[in-house]
Image (tube, rainbow, N blue to C red; front, side, top):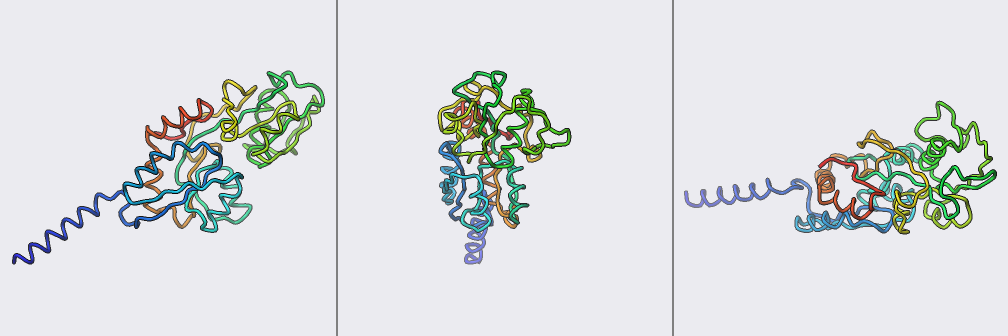
Length: 272
């Protein structure tokens, strides 16, 4: 009888330990998260929390927004947190990826910067503008230009119009499509350049202080195509550990770091 009680007590204790584990069925392991850009301070408290739970979260840096999707599809990383849901879906359709967003992270209004003019209204006939070459940022940039009366787009152009959707360009503005990572350097050669939020922050640019114009984004959630997301492979969408990481991201501690780190250029796109 004593032996039975001892065994039962041990079983109950083991069950209690299992029940309090936030990752439960998922074994402790290394999780690789892909990012783009150098500013990733918001991941530090998540890394520390997971470390105490026996999980080694590693940040894998890329210098191009298309590379993390391929790496995730191929299993080189487990998650990525560096792009909008719209970009993820577009890339997945074009390349046959099997990726899915499982949570939001932040939203970064797209800004246009210049060393030569202080307003888009100062653009002269034949001036040039640099635009990051990925289709999503191109569309967002064209929408900013339309909102500032630089050009006019087709009525049915949708969220992400392309150059072919331009119906009026009264100042005959020239457009140069550049790699997102080169948009800052392009400022020396054009009248103005659109720079993605992460790259702008890397170069010390503050949206509301330095941009001569920027997009108006409202609301958040996975239905907002311009909100940045955490993505995994479709087969891993229900993974308890990965969803636990999303929960750790959606905290006030992370939100405060994002707000401070990016000085209002990027802000949290989640409730906590």
